[in-house]
Amino acid sequence: MIKKIVLASNNPGKVREIGQLLADLDIEVVPQSDYNIPEVEETGLTFVENAILKARHAAEYSKLPALADDSGIEVDALMGAPGIYSARFAGVGATDTENLQKLISDLQALNEPTRTARFQCLMVLMAHPSDPTPLICQGTWEGEIIDTPKGDNGFGYDPVFYLPEQQCTSAELPADKKNALSHRGKALSCLLKKLSNK
Ligand code: IMP
Image 1 (cartoon, helix red, strand yellow):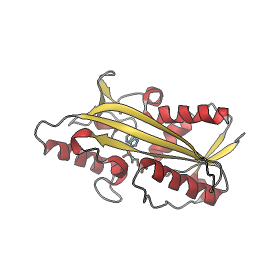
Image 2 (image 1 turned 135 degrees about the vertical axis):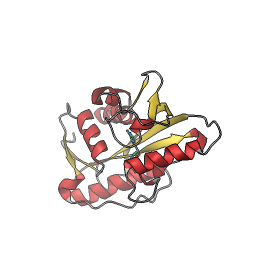
Image 3 (image 1 turned 180 degrees about the horizontal axis):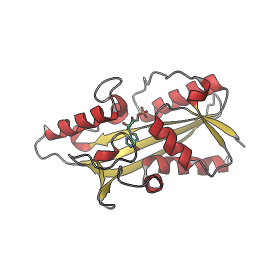
Image 4 (image 1 turned 90 degrees about the vertical axis):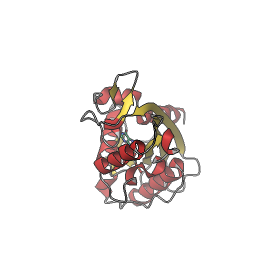
């Protein structure tokens, strides 16, 4: 049974949420910053390829099993963009606010766009860098994009991701509620089930 894993992310929002989601487990989760692991270039063309690249890289450096999340938002009116490019939508090194403003202005440039969108999360656990059977799970969260950001919780595109059933954005949800509903929460609970069956 795995006792300690490295979390292959330097995104503070993700590290916080994954830490909360794994808090009750008997597994020690250490962020890759503890091992001075440099960022790996995300050269994949799919979420799953990028998640595997990140997990393999962190497992190589840390010599520990590694958990990676590759995630992003798909907007129907933008043909699925920004998708895997969500973190760098407004350019490499762009801030969350710059990415979100670009999303708002790209939608405003369209005539009465469809507002539907979804967050995707691909979660990968690799036991070691050459693990030929990584555990892979996907979580999806449906919502709509609004023009005016609302809420201070979460990170990234949360302030413009409106949830009709909750009547608020994901940035207005308390952390535990977001974790219970989110793409990341769903992917991680699927992964934990697979892990307990291993
Ligand atoms: P990655 O680090 O390449 O996986 O990029 C993920 C990007 O997708 C983040 O930087 C955010 O812009 C966006 N994203 C993923 N999950 C969330 C979320 O839960 N809320 C808001 N934005 C998210």
